[in-house]
Length: 134
Image 1 (tube, helix red, strand yellow):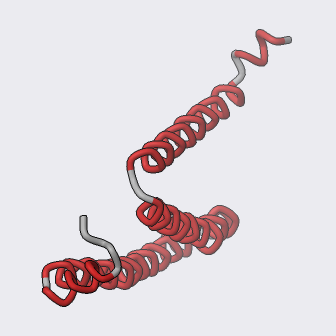
Image 2 (image 1 turned 180 degrees about the vertical axis):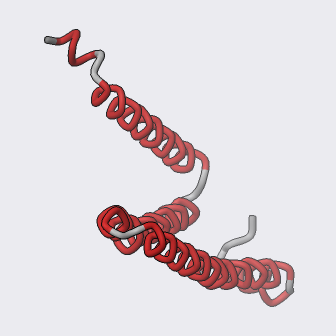
């Protein structure tokens, strides 16, 4: 019984998924521990917020694209299936461009603004008054 289960195709398929998930979880844990150990609280908070936002985007993709694709596409004839896949690809490409630009632009501007504030005398003075000289 156990030998038959060990050689079954189902076990082989699920073992790959389990190993993949275990490696992903271990890598996430390792990155989290390294960041906790070697960064300050603010930087780790930024990492957690960014990771949560990415998880939200992946979940939205799974809900709105992967699920309907897996359920609806097999029932369609080849021409309709091709049209459906093309429309989803076009939507996903456009949405990822908007999300990328919408997410990177504020981060870039915030980084530039932070560098400018640190480089100007007014920014230095504000840090000195707050006890932020390092």
